[in-house]
Image (cartoon, rainbow, N blue to C red):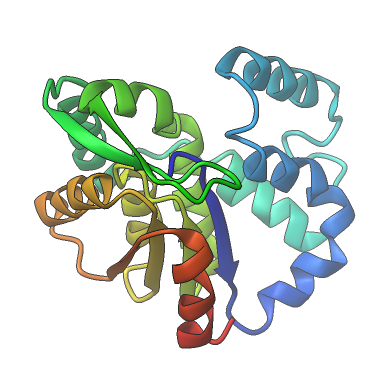
Length: 217
């Protein structure tokens, strides 16, 4: 599964502030949740337009203390965190991996599972979230300190690794339809020595309902 959707359960308190300030944050979260729908060029155009036209893009003129703090400490945080280099090194390794794997294609509405042979570096090039956005999700997780994160579409595990590093006390539940890709993601986690991630493998139609019961979402 190459698409990604992430759900974060926040600690008590900050979620209330988030709801109060939701009108301001709609463009931000709309941008995050639909990150896989658009091409990189389309995303760049949409982000640039938002950045140039939003008068409070730097936090100036924002009345809500929470929103101002979010802009200052999350959106505009330019710090290079220790995990950035380590995770991006794994991305580079995947982008150079010429290994060929067989990937199950569940196909929307199809009852027949098709098997495709794919090159790992091609999967990495087409499915990994760009560094800029993956690191933004890291900062969001670091800021809100979620107790639990549920991710649909592990892919090769780069974004999952960022989420796990954002709050190492959190439990990260990630689902990947293709077992061969899930194995590669686990290799990524092992290389980074990440221990707070649990991968569920298989068709979402079967695995997701069971996972949601398990985590009580």
